[in-house]
Image (cartoon, rainbow, N blue to C red):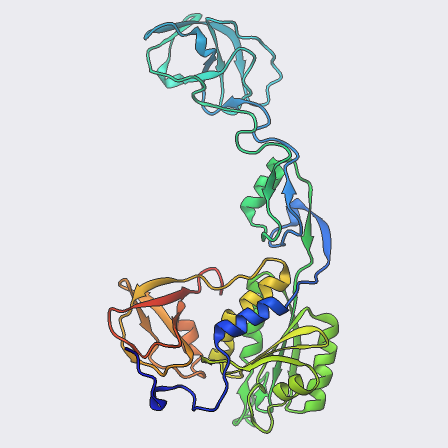
Length: 414
């Protein structure tokens, strides 16, 4: 039985915090993708997202062919365990223009990838054949159609080969070319604006800046968006001035499909981002029940979605993966994509407050999940150390060594 005493709650009674799943569900329902489409050459399509289903223009294989080097014949030519067939003079090679009929009782030498001539439906491996002047013999147990590929057995002309919303990979380009496609319809890349705020933030450090903080969030977030295949737009840095921040948001809404801000999302006197999103924009959610990342603003500005991230790098990183990934996926046409996960035994123990979801920097060692030695949101070294996140649910109070925990690997994401 889990206790729910005030001392064990993450937030005091009387405060309202939005659960992570509620915030994600609301965003999924409220956000819509509005990107333009274009036709591009298949050879230049890597990383683009399909705006329509793709239909094969050509079957693959286009013609029935052989899968091995060997001898082709009609299966009905075989009459017993020891097979003797006449060998005709031609040799069929891939792309060969040789046209011949192979009569019953005869065979023809044929090389891998060559189209099957008339009269051939089966191929025997050359290593299993004895050649005697103009005859061949073999005694292997062979089946009709063995070592051959049927026309269209992989892809048939007219069928859907790739679905709308797929991000094109190298192997997809190979399939598209094989299926006769030269151009495909794709969405224009999602334009993601990245804005840093805060009087304490500087881009360069000198001796007079002993009380300043270098802007780690903006280059980190720009890199994440580039890794995800989007078009990052550097909106620069702005001090804690509501008029300047408003101007930046106005400008960004004209050129961005979604805006990420970092800093100014809490309740302090100089936290203008959250105030502006509430007064001049549309604030969907603000206080999300998660750690790290409680001052997370989910909003829109002039119909452009805005994700107001916390200023601490760890919180900004975690919120970007948990919220930014599915939001950008939906807006880009790829679909609502959340982090993959699997359960693994914990190598640590931990007490936890109920009522909020927690994310711990983690990696796997000896088949168990271990966590970074500190949970501080400013410990950016923990992000570099980690290979994934541990997600602890809202109602969990304690993790013991050996308990199964939810591990979310970074692989393929960052």
